[in-house]
Image (cartoon, rainbow, N blue to C red):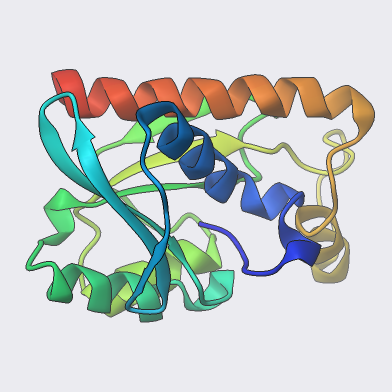
Length: 177
């Protein structure tokens, strides 16, 4: 998941898009078609036909792209793997779950609502919280943080996390969850 547009491409919130771009390039899949408000590419990975997509909607409306795309492709939520950022994980940490709640993530909330299902795999990529020692931040501070760019120190960790998430995606396809 991520937000469309160049101004968001390097933001923390777009680490999911960065993972899909990395995976697509690694697998020789071009995201060069438009379908259901998304950039889409198709290919075969580990002998399995896959469709990679980056929703063209803003993060909080991801379900407006994901649900129609699944319907057009005649896929169920169980066929879906969503890669997205997570404030509650330390920067660089990856967590994989077969299902679950939105955990406060508005993009996931939108997908769950649009699919009327929580039963899809998710790869969460930690972006950490601003001032991790501080118990709470205002909504505005959180928005500024997730839409902000990684610091120079954080960039290398984020780059490694993108590679790890891509490897996890490959492993899920190749070996299963």
